[in-house]
Image (cartoon, rainbow, N blue to C red; front, top):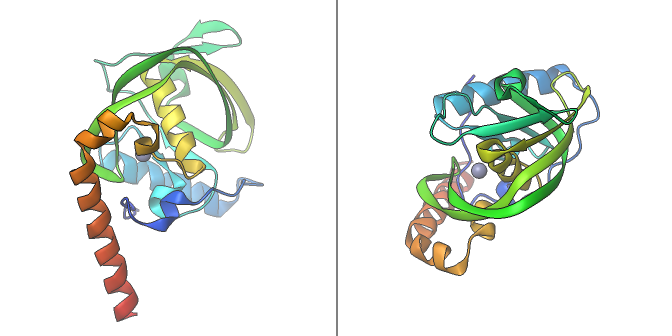
Length: 193
Ligand code: ZN
């Protein structure tokens, strides 16, 4: 089922997700719905907060993005990125490393808005997979950026928080428009309920 994507201005995007204790049937269904929603929106990552759920769960799939490559290491050895796609991250813990890289980033909660964000080049990830089993890997490139962006969401942090003042100033009007639209919609919902 395709779920509505929550846009900037909704307070759920600022909520820190609760840890998931076990891979219940509800979580399995949420994972399937989040992938369906992400693919329908042509995104490469989606966090639970973006569909209104305040839990530590994100889905990622970087396949099909050829102009921005990703790298993967499993047990310290280079591995095929596709071997872990599509990727489910439950309760992820990150250790970023390497140089800081500035590159354009978007977010499904900020439709059509893109700006430069600086993040570290690599990230070591420990998480649970869709079955609740522990996984660990190190990644770079676009995948490292996506993992950092989605894990930020799980902690109520948005990409606009990571932008330089200059980058944010350039898109300030667009951000404010999304926020105003979301708040107007929320007010309408409150009134009709
Ligand atoms: Zn996002």
